[in-house]
Every structure is written in C-alpha cells, then in structure tokens.
Image (cartoon, rainbow, N blue to C red; front, side, top):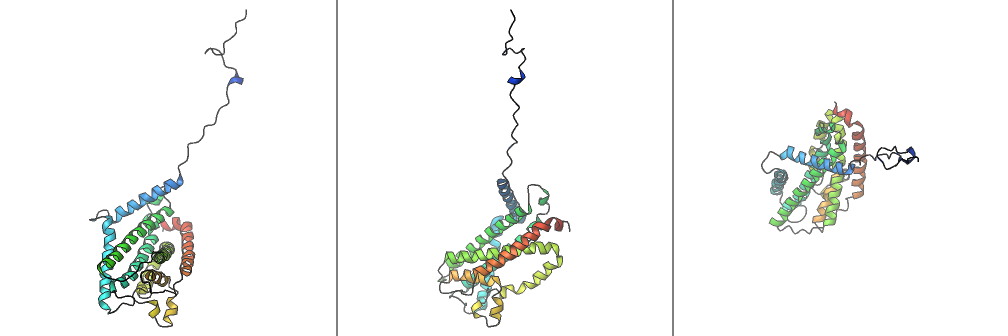
Length: 286
C-alpha cells in the first residue's frame, strides 16, 4: 500500500499551484502637503516673532504697542497743528482714520517685499518654499496691524466723544482694498529690490510725499483741480476714503472705486508673483 503524503505535514512540499501569487505592498501614505505647508507657515511665523521681538521686553506685545503708541503720538502732533478737522469734531479721530491705514500699507508692503530675501537660508530646506515665506510674513503683519488699528481707534473712541458711527461693512471693504494693494506692491517690490539694487533708493525717494497725496491729512474732496484728478489715480486715496466713510456716516466717498483698486492690485500682484516665482532662486545668488 502506497503511503499518501499529507499536505499539512511540515515536511511535505507544497505544490506550486497552491502557492498564492505575491501581493504588491502598497507604498506608505505620502505626507499631506497642505498640512505640511500650514505647519511650515506656523513655524515661520513663530520664528519671525522670535527673531524680531523675542529678546525685547514684552515680546510680541511690544510689537503691537510700539506702532500703536507711535500713531497716537503722531495723531496728537497733527491735531495740535490744525484748528478744525476736515471731518467731524475730533482731531484725533480724523487723523487716526488716515494714519492707521497709511502705516498699515507701509508695514504690509515692506514685510512682503523682504520676505524672500530675509528667508534665504531657510529656502535651502526642501520643506520650505518661497510661497511659505510670503504667506507667513503676510499673515503675521496683517494680524499685527489689525490689532494696532483696533487698539488705536478703540482708545480714541473711548477717551473722546468722537460722534462717529461704525459701519463695519464699509470699513472691512476699505481694509480689504488696502490689504490687496499693499500685498501687490510688496510682491512687485520683492522682485525689483532683489533684481535692481538702485530701485530700493529710488522707491524710498518716490514714496516720501505719499502721506500728503493719499488723503491722510487733507481730504480728496478739498483738493483743487487739476490736482484732484491726478490724485484719483493713487489707490491709497480710494482705500483711506472708504475707511473714513465707514466711521463718518455723513461722509460719502463717491470718488472711491473698489473695482479700480482691486484691478490694479490684481495686475501688479500677479505680475510680481510671476516674476518672483520664476527668478527668485537666481536672484538669491546675486
């Protein structure tokens, strides 16, 4: 009698037809780029805060209070130099509604324009892109300036009887225009500052009289022709006029055009972004 081999025996060979085909191992799940990007941006924001004011007393609190106190002092100086404000009855409120947006424009545009250059060493890491540095600088500056604006305006409205009525919709529209234009200027200058070293000095000279031609101290409506027509092309006139209309219910900034500001911001911002994304690596080697 022939002995039959038991397939379950460990010494018995397993027929090839009973061996299952090899199963391909699935690759490990890739890291979520969106999560990695926001984690990188958060780290860049914390690094920026620490590098700028990490060693100073008060840290980030001083980062907010310093410009706020500066604006309050400038507002007091301008108020002492003029007898009656162009709008309302309170000097401080009128000049703050012009100075706060103006300084916000300068802070955002300067911060965005220097984002790539100041993060040159970080861009050597594969997980950090130039877009991450732009977003981090943008978010930190906008948040800081928003807090500065809130502190200054709230302080003045608390201390004085400004007789102003807050229209949040109009104010948010004006600040949206201002942030869009500031970012666009920052993106374009971010490329031009690295490409042409002389442009930084030229830009500094060109923008010195900006506080006088942006509706900060004098209303656009009070300007005589033909200067009024020339000033209309300045997007800051539209931004500041819209913000002021949100505080002074009887002031109609009919000249302000959000469409014009957003259109200029889109053209300048997209152009600057394209130049930066295409040439930032070679510009960092200059």
